[in-house]
Length: 306
Image (cartoon, rainbow, N blue to C red; front, side, top):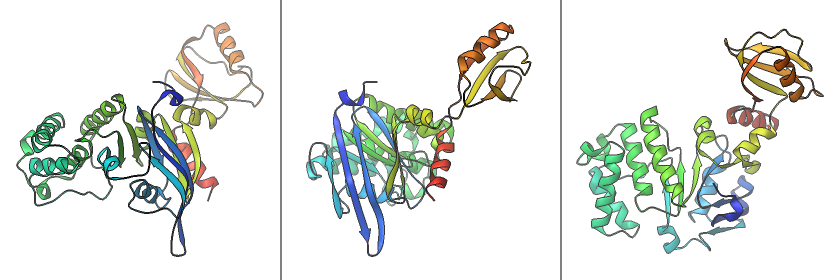
């Protein structure tokens, strides 16, 4: 992946604020999204994520701040280059699957022929070919979710905003949807994804912003954020026995036959531990600083800001 500085700048959100009566939904939100990346917009329920998305889409007007989408303010032409899958699904329940997708594609500027052709291709890829004549309202939740994903990507948007894309999906279907998202990213699109399934966020997203009580409280590349919150713990995998006399190690926790977590004293150096392991003839397969998961970081930050 290229660095963000080398990518096409698709979205800028600067110091957004939005109130509804006496309630402040968004107080100060800023971030950028570039082409060729998946950007995770995270936060607990009620944090301001959906309000932020609706301001980006020009559904709500911000009380303060600026938004630049695809080079300027949102307008019909830029809306046609944007895809959106809301958490509250927006399909027509009485329409048949293929007819619904074809119609939605024409609303984004595709010819009816092109929209139908693309819809058929995506239905095949997401294993829904046999459902093309089925009415939306009779589909299972998982099938409806996949149809909603197709509707959002059918016109191959430059900017895709996708809210909880993996809800109601088993691992096989989640992988199918993941492949569609990554294909769009690899074509140069920018994808904004919200999800409470942080394991998937960790695997998919290049960068994240965590919103809490209307403010961005954490922002950056996923790996850098994980390093920022890394405790003084080493992960060790290998063969042999540990004698408990490793320099600077204050706690040894064995998780399986070949996996250990070593807690270090504040001044301890990982390299000294590695050298001691070599002296003990311990066969090291893997040795690294143990990085926390996004789940763990999410819980820690939200608790600290409570």
